[in-house]
Image (cartoon, rainbow, N blue to C red; front, top):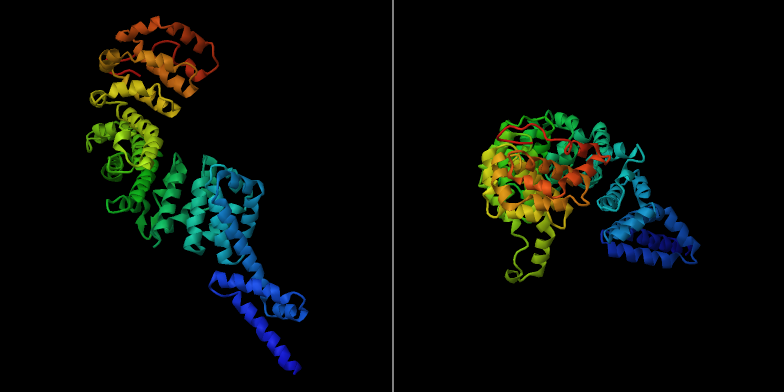
Length: 482
């Protein structure tokens, strides 16, 4: 009789433990609740459950579910994330990564990813403990999820040359490169994004990338395949950015076929009105950066797919309210209108920085000079800076100084722009004014607009960069000025 009772208790206890391993989370939860009720006041039941291995499973469930709950909390508002960071969630989650259980590791990484991609999280927290980065590198190959989450963390936390160096020195390239041929699209994209962040203005990384082989194929050729028209736009654009950064860092020549025949045309495609507004902004800014130092690329771009005229569409947002029935569409247009104008001005500035024919084509574009003048007084400082850069690029042409600039009296909004402007704007605006003050420029009336007083105030200032501009006119040839 006693043996029979013990057998019943053991069988019941085993049933409780078995339910903890059920694939249905709801049944697991109910099993925990039933177990809680069963052990109250029953020492024999408690002993049986311990012997049958309930404790490790309960601890595992506690850890994993807590990590999942924290991850869910992190997906709330920025204030929520700030509170989590203030509660030292990051060190706790990083400590959780030493657990051998993959599911728990993935839950911790998912939460870390969500926390780190928030703008309120200090990225330096990833680099405080020198053992964290190498440990993350070692976890990367555990599963597609660990690859996805860790590369996202690296991409968002790589904000400086120092960060690039840390990731590079701990084997980021070797660990991430194989992910470019992963069967998972998400993993391939995150690897691509991570490489674009690592290569940006970094010669060491770019020079290494250009020699990397992925499954026997040069990495640059992998990027070229990813720019094919049948690939997702996000992939085309990010691959083009990778090659752009490698080119600007000196790892790929500007006359290389992968730049002239693949990267540049891909970025021009991104500027077409068939693309999403965000894609058009990113495409234009990347193209401007690619060809900024190279005259030949500027000439090729200027005759590719009517790019100069195509950019005029960037100024047609937001659309007229009367033509929009969807308020969300209007909000979307308003949100990106400043970014579109900024990107267009940047690209026009890059296009027209050297070639006289391109400058002429730009100024003859529909309402172009009016748009630049309007851009100088925009509420967004980024748009104002981009507009003055565009104006400076065009002001290097004697022909434009004598025609378009004079017709639109651009010196007036320039003078207004100089009042309480940041140094970056002051430098560019002062340089442009220098070009307007040339002997052969009809804009010498600027002198009567208190320009001498303005330049004297700059000379009296402490900014050495600004002192270069008002200190006296330089020598220019008769076709292009500085």
